[in-house]
Length: 304
Image (cartoon, rainbow, N blue to C red):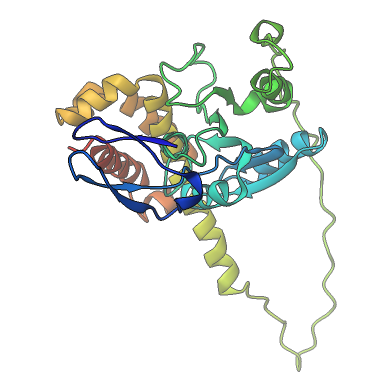
């Protein structure tokens, strides 16, 4: 290989067999500058039949996995941003399908990091936009943050495979047209009367047995409710960012986020309050927690 001395610009020819991945030091014969020359890393091409699906909701993962396995893809699953990064580097799939509201590291941040690494930059990325109000957003996001495409949760079965085919060059974007779905109206379910179970007669000598639910089950249910509230909060804040990223970053830099996005935050808070029980809200302000964590992480990314 040919190396150019950064000081005197002399071209030096170095035999490839002498190089190692750790690097070998050479002295420039003209200016005596010591150069550390490494063997170029071999670019490993991502596997075309392997896809990583990253989403916190197991039901969404199951829906996507079903669609992919039916087409012969091997599916790797992850449930947070850190796990996604580790598996993507290890497995090198050709495609990563990432929820924008992933816990630990948001999906669009995972995308950015994958695209910046030499070994994972060739991985295609589709962001899952966790739209919390389908009637509000009828436009494409301002920025995909390095991703190759995006899809909304309610279009997974309808469009995901087509979008993958576009990334593989099998189809063109013009061939993939989003067809409006007919509105789905929930039919009232018939009321089913449960038969009353007759208790056996209780004798005076035998007190009735009282069944107490295990405390652990109550705790698990409570934890799940809290995690659902946290996910909803992350979904709302990531939604705002996906559609107003430039404005949001400027507001974070100038410490005017709450005032600049007062309207969006009021709408988000209203939605959050309508879907989260009072018992969960009594355990913590998870909506504000999501906002503060997002701002703190963006400040680190923006180096503020």
